[in-house]
Image 1 (tube, rainbow, N blue to C red):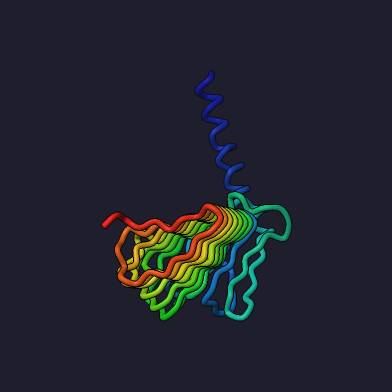
Image 2 (tube, rainbow, N blue to C red):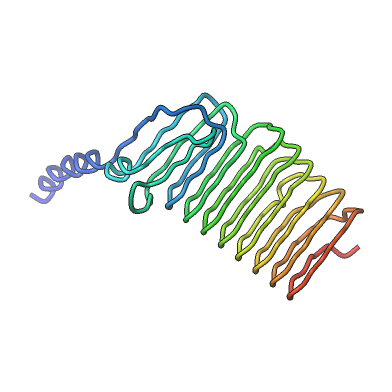
Length: 225
């Protein structure tokens, strides 16, 4: 009797799940940048333009997608986007932004410059970087992780944020860190670093050019010769 009851219950559970799970494809204008917020998760890659949204039916219906000056902006009409997953691709991606607890995971291709903004607990993780210059702005407990190659990494970090650039092959680092932030990177040639307010900048290489300024209990750390 119990097995019969379980057999009858299983199809109803499947129907219930399918009624609330949804995947939606949206048509948008061309974009080179992606900006997400409100706890939404996004996976970004280089390829033919595509925007797919998955999650429960109500959450997917509340996702708003607009393109503003080449930047795909994804927000929630109300509430947060927990459980919403965006799968995005574009022939060229040059900018990523995550705020208000959103997260972006990106697999990229070569581009002359690349910019990242993360704030309010947002997370951005990028691999495949290949640029002359990568610019990062991180604040409010955000976290940025970089993998690939760049000639110059420019970082402006504040408010307890973290920038992990150890896996980025790099010639020069230009970093400003304040308010308890942590920056890690390994440039081969040059470091220009300014740290304040209990922040730390960690360099595991021995670049020949160093211009360092610290205040308020902050530090810039190099390995011992």
